[in-house]
Length: 209
Image (cartoon, rainbow, N blue to C red; front, side, top):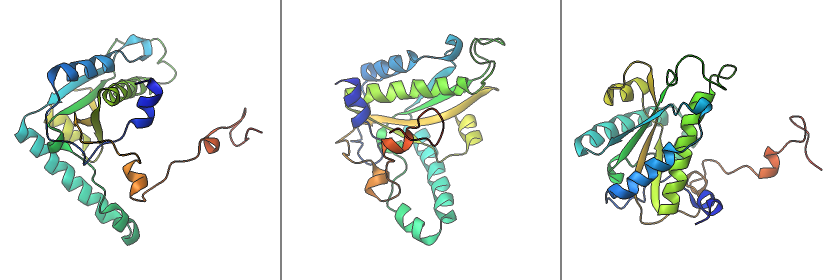
């Protein structure tokens, strides 16, 4: 699979996990791909906490379900109706959770390339996630990024030391299929912007001829 094929076929997987647990050697390849991501000042500010214990997966899934309900209750009725059938996590079904964390202190005080833009550290961890996700697509493995959680709760859950911040819970596992259309488009939540709307010439708002 070319990198372009992986980009186009990658999906945020929720309901398609088979229930099988990803093989150790495949998981190792995905984590290796993530660990080869570029990072500001070569700090590699990420860590990967692999969660497989069924009771711990259930515990976190229950927390996610509660946060999903909070969001659903905050929506106006018409949006709540659209949101209702959208599955937001596959924590138990995937069989494996990978918590990606960010450590701002990694590499010391003077980080080459981060002095002016501190956020480049978090961007680096996001690149590790993207590497993992594209490698998973090439392997036929599904990944779902869960963002319905309280960050402090997740930090306590993984016993993160001070200064280490969880930035993603990834559900990772074999899938029955990849949807051809992303869930949020299929269910009518939001469509993809045309590329032309995102391209500007020289200054923001000036369109290319």
